[in-house]
Image (cartoon, rainbow, N blue to C red; front, side, top):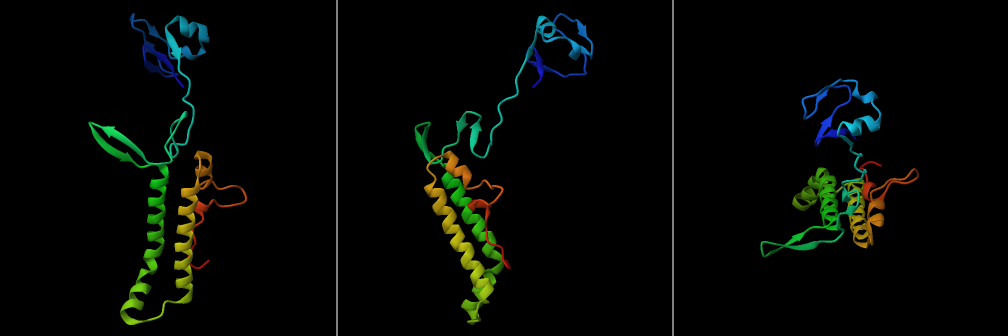
Length: 167
């Protein structure tokens, strides 16, 4: 992370002026850490990295389950990761079924059979949706939840392994 002077970032390779009006050269980066500190500069460490899909910051995981908060005397349910991901799973399911929905409508309106490969694909998508929702619901902690969406060298995670028409 950068060096700071009175809270502002001092970029390497750029000159800067301190609060006493002293102009410092653009090669200030060659100064030792002690020289920089003597001139009032402070080093700011990089924040710890974290996966913002699952954590608010490096130390705070998002809630897996819904949380009820009271704001201005009103109870508000904040959806947890399980609720959010179950909704996303249903959206994915709908988007995968949408291109073949017309077969179902055609069957209902005209009694025309749905081709077996289309019926099999639709069934596989719906079964996979059920499997993903069951896995999300069963996740007991953050590591188990993250594993649902983390591919390994050998396998595709259940949350990422959707059926593809024609395969």
